[in-house]
Image (cartoon, rainbow, N blue to C red; front, side):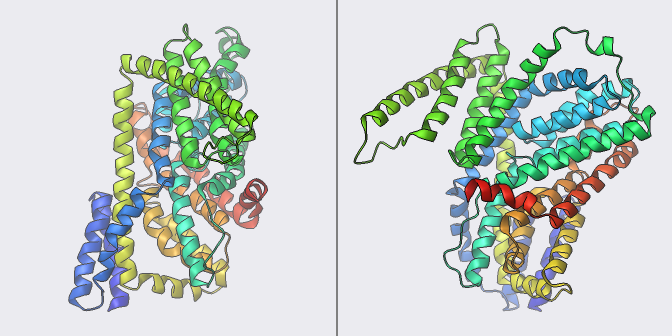
Length: 521
């Protein structure tokens, strides 16, 4: 009976979610129902529930998860500051004279927004409002236009900094430690979110390249589906080089500051998320008053200066021996911090006066609370599932699959792909990964590679009907002439491209493991 209860528990969870109940409360409610059933049948030890407060406290004190609201704030602030609109407009003019150029520009902008905002909903809605009417007006096939925008919007799930990689990195780290303890290794090498950020960079860029190659192939094979914009019309708005620089420089500096500080090892993901939040606020303040740039420029330069200074100088002031040069560097860093504070206050005042700050804070609080309440519900669900023996059942099942470790990996990837039709990436990350992660890692898989494989697989959940969130976002802003079937049929080639990326990553694991080994040793 115990073996049946853990299976029924998982089936009941999926059923309640499909009925429309809120995910976070469904996770906790299902767990409590089956805990009571298990106790009444004497197959569940109630001591497992006594661990739950410690789990909540662990979530509260987890420094890695602090990066989630900071990255959300960064993305929402950039979306409100019209960075995406300028990027789309400029890239559309830059590539528009090529056949398929608007589709290419959507892919490029999607990659840039993914590396700067990382929020799928904001990216898809923004590109759907700005690019989709333009593409349709220029004669693009509605299916190709919808598929391009929806797929480019999901790049924020695989290109760092990504909220998916933050929460997935935390779960993979826990699963890796659990697997190593089960194998008798009580001091395993740690796996960090920075490892996953570095590991996801090359696969993310390869996926962007595959999207662009598909756009080029369609333009060659079906020219009528993606026509070019006449050159005189696309270049009529002034100095193109200046427009490109104005649109690209600030986001690229922000991306390099955030990702570079993590990959080089200057900052942890949480610290880099703080840098990103400050940078996004400064950028918004600058865009609102470009005629008064000095405070923002001073703060941005000071922020970059502090990052560079900490790279070459040990800034810890609690050491017993500090040289004169280090004292001088600490004084310079203090002045730079004052410059950051000054510019940040000016930017916040501008954002507040333009009635942007309150909506940004409200959206950040709503999204962050949604994620964390799912985390807490998933903690209770996993506790009860383990108390019913579900983890042992999963390990035995995966170990007994024909084909060994490779067969187990294929089955898990297939199950996650199918679950993506019905569940969000957050539920899959916090419910499925803690269950299957330790079992897969005990079979000898590299944790970074496994994390990136799961991330690429989860990316498809945004595009797979009927509950793909990117499809809902695009449907909400698409013109009336665009039907739901246009969107569904348009994303199919991009889902196949993502699955092809999954196969390539499985055949060449070095795409995910090479950079972390080079950077972090």
